[in-house]
Length: 114
Length: 111
Image (cartoon, rainbow over all chains, first blue to last red; front, side, top):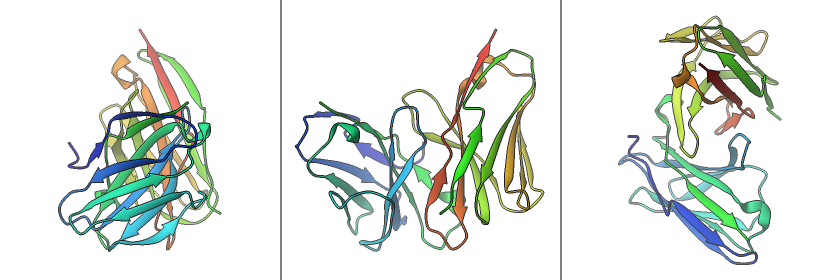
């Protein structure tokens, strides 16, 4: 077990809706990253948060947004869902300044957009 | 922009055989990771390689890194069915704050 949890495990939405995915990191892990993994592909970096501020973003549109809270939890919000947003969403957390080897992935949320 | 390529993308092996998965990356990096993913599951860290010539081994898997060639290999020795999974390499760019993953290699070991 990595100590990183995500909820929900599965989710079905329709096109145009909004969704919020949640991640709870290990205590002391003040950096959280979110990844999108489409079926048959490698994870793609969405963004990273440190001390409740976004400090890195991949090639994702603004309708992908996030929040990080002081209690080591975070959210990924996706507005105006599109069919191509169907994927496994992974969060990963670590302590900033710690080596990357200590980054741990959660079990993921599988989102299906119909 | 950092790009990571793996090959092959699909590998079907007989039990007991040896094979190698290759991971090439396009820009300088100071660390490379190998992950395993079982169907419907999250990523499990296998190895982290930090320097040129680094070699790590765990059971039937051995990973190596050549930073000059920007190449890492994951060698499978005497494959067993339990090794069936998807294997990803991922690279952190120098001064970067994200992992860039390859497309993954689906490994199927047949008995």
